[in-house]
Image (cartoon, rainbow, N blue to C red; front, side):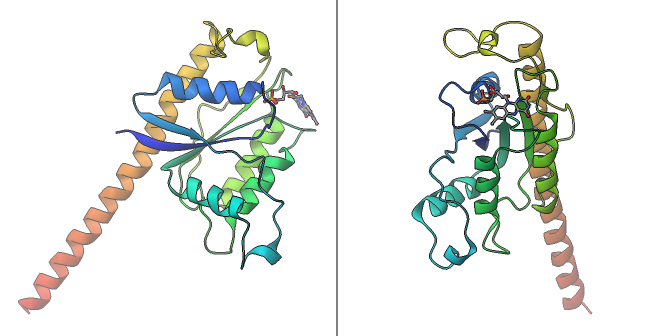
Length: 207
Ligand SMILES: Cc1cc2nc3c(=O)[nH]c(=O)nc-3n(C[C@H](O)[C@H](O)[C@H](O)COP(=O)(O)O)c2cc1C
């Protein structure tokens, strides 16, 4: 099965290493992951007063995420936490209350940094919001990608051969399988429920 994946990158930087890692994940599974980068740099800051008349950029962002089967967050860590631009996008997508476009979407989090702890702090802050947003979050492999620099990529922005590319390959496969498992399980449960309802209706007819 091919799944539509919304990629949300927590960096606006042109040469972002996180954007390049995101592209690499898609390229490694382009047979089964149909990825779109969702831009977040133009989103006006979330303001609850605007919920009744939302800016067009919020509407566009919400539609793009809603259309996806899964979400991949690829983000740097800023000051041991989640970059403000990403938190703003998450807040925009989560509202109005009860209409979050993230609800029930399977997701994964990847953080990459030139530093040695690979954005662990940001990774877990995103994970924390994912709990409230009711996003089934891939648990393993964890992806705190440390020592990632421009030198990790070739001139086309693709990951060079080596342990990082191998890890990203494993990640890309695990993410596809995670999204697949969630969607198949939901379909099977819906089928079971429909079958049970049919049986109950038949039993009532013959009662
Ligand atoms: C405001 C700011 C805060 C940063 N804080 C951290 C940090 O807490 N941990 C870390 O590993 N790197 C930190 N960095 C360095 C980033 O990891 C590095 O700039 C990285 O390349 C940013 O990701 P990007 O290439 O995807 O834009 C920080 C960078 C900036 C600009």
